[in-house]
Amino acid sequence: MIHEVDEALRRLLTESGLEAAGVDVVFDAPTRDWAARRSTPTVCVFLYDIREDHARRGSGAGEVYDEEGFVVARRSPPRWFELTYLVSAWAGRPEDEHRLLSQVLVCLTARDDLPARLLGGTLAELGLHVPLDTGATGPDTPSASDVWSALGGELKPSIGVRVRAPLAGISRVTAPPVTEGLVVRAAPRSAPDTEDTRRLRYTEVDAPAPDEGFGGPRDRRPTPARRRRGERQP
Image 1 (tube, rainbow, N blue to C red):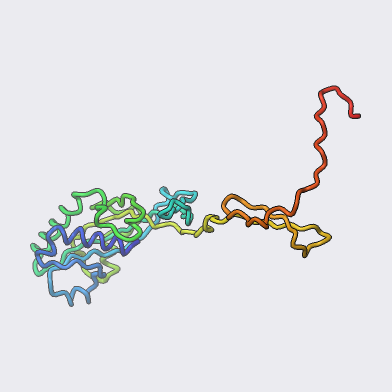
Image 2: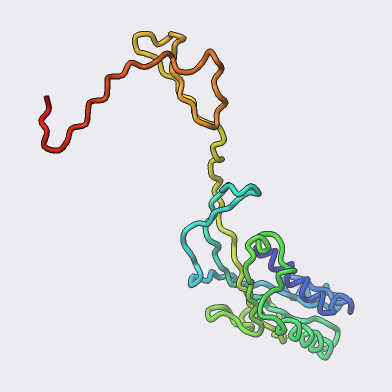
């Protein structure tokens, strides 16, 4: 699921004009060594925090159907996670970095969720909205200054982006539907190996041949006459 959110963010940012301007969109950690190797204008989207949204945890299981409408699996409900990114711009001059950040900010704040056409994999299969919150972070997530300090670099202007994405539940395959009828053969205990057996067939099974069928008529006791209320048994 995480890589699918990454790809959706990449496509969203590149379509905003960054790709046409020759700006790279990467998901690397912006460390000192990485910054020293950078040679082109870059927008870095760094994922630094992953937390489950317990308020959206569901229960029960849903059914998965095949093309013919049969149940082929049962899937537990998706679990929602908050992915928090630190978006920064890297260029030769601070003015260029601010211009890139402004372009990124306009692109991200124009939407409240990731467009469905950009979603792939399990995100597309689930068909759920993936909320996008720009300029805010979770209440328990590290601050931007702490993240920059942990990366060993200097504090830079950055945008906090939070995505709430569903993680597909676990699917358990069910038994295939019954497509054949049940055939039951019975024989007297005194002659278990006799060929004169009785067969019970359901409508889904082909009709028996002329020489098959029940092994002769059954000898049944006559049905006793029904007694009226108040009559005594003879």
